[in-house]
Image (cartoon, rainbow, N blue to C red; front, side, top):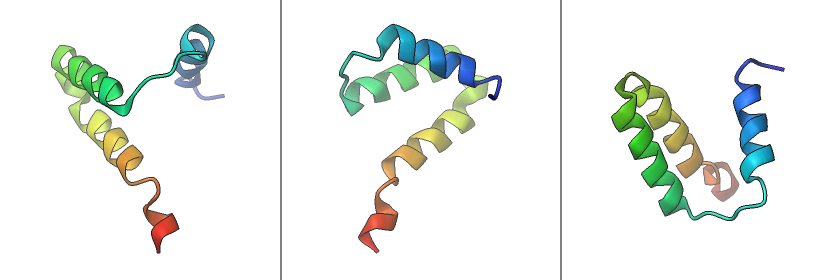
Length: 59
C-alpha cells in the first residue's frame, strides 16, 4: 500500500456511499488548489487524466 492510499481509504470510508457530480468534484479541486497552490500541477494532471479516461475506448 502506498502512503497516499491512506487518504483514499479514508475517502472511501467516510464518503463512499455519496454520489457527486463531476462539477462538484471540479469545484472541490479548484478550492484545494486555491488553498494549496503548490499542488496545482498534480491536480491539473489528475483532472486531465480523469477527463481523458475513455479516450482509449474510442480508438
